[in-house]
Image (cartoon, rainbow over all chains, first blue to last red; front, side, top):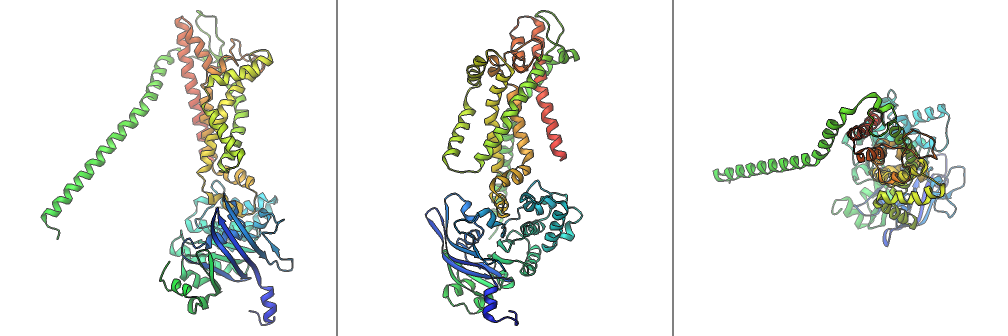
Length: 269
Length: 286
């Protein structure tokens, strides 16, 4: 935390995302139960917990993707704290999910570049289809995003090749570049390394550490070492509830809830 | 623990496994050959009977009176092309649109109705489609026409294109679609501008198969497009087609007509084949 601002000011200005009383259902199945969580700017928040604990569904509520599934429902508030602008609730009655999603990017478990699109088009398709037509702007955006995703040097000579021609790890970084190109304030990552080898995983982890200077990252992971390595805050989910959230170092050394302790020490899950 | 007896038992099991594998492979191969054989025999027989009548004149000349030798089926070839173009102009866009709607897997009333209608359309006998076009186009317009024939073929083409489109789009994993939505794009843009370009080879195959199927339809044309012996005379006039021409020629008693029927049949199969190959090559180069 910066020494030039008071603690209260810093806490106020550094909030990036506040979730209040979020509930999610699949039909009658209540999968996220009254979760409240705040993510700070320039920080990585890791969501951990056993399979089926609702952490992925929670993440998918944060860009209104959960509701795209037949029979899925959400209730609650998710506030984006725009700097120098008014904060807004993405679940407000007049909030358009399509516009809200532009502020909150997402990277998925399996690398999923769009088949049939070149590397270049994969990165800029979000801008193109949002109406950006000028070639120069698109080229700038592509280069910037690919550099952010640490992929530029590997692909700058083959931007016209299909995105699917890259290796798994490169594809995942391409997907990160694609998400960054529309300039989101928040980046959601749903187990982004679970389909990758250890070296590709390490590269993505380094990338996440660097990206937090530009976007707020929330990452779901099954790998507790990964959570410990890259996150500032860790949130532990169990059976749809947020059991405990706090600074990663504290969660992993002095968890306050016995269930958290049992999980991180490997006694279940 | 693993003595002589154990080793022998293992060898026996191994031998049995190999034998099972070989037996299963042979049975499957035989069944595959049996499945392909009819198609192969049709091709060979068509070629043997049809090749005798092949000449340039056959493709560029109009038919001559029954019993007179020479002449060709140029009227039927241009006619089939016109009818296919009319059917495609309506059937492909409507079929693609219906297929896209179906692939969204919604459970709303419109989707369910659309699904039922498409299912029903697939199973309607083609002669009934012809009757429908006769009642609603031929009678009101006062005569047989290319319009009516094209419309009948379109009705047959639409559900085939729709089904193929739905199946191909369903092969795209949900998370690819979600990645598009997550970029802040509306659903229709994701399907139309991101998902479709990724499956264009598959879609083209589906459309081609639908075209090939329709190109061989005879029944719906008998009382819609009818036929003529003079070549193209306008979309509001009767028009010839290869299948109907084959039907007419094969019904004639004379040897010359029957030879022409065989050659026309060969040409129809060959034209469908050529269009298929060309489209596949074009798609592969892209």
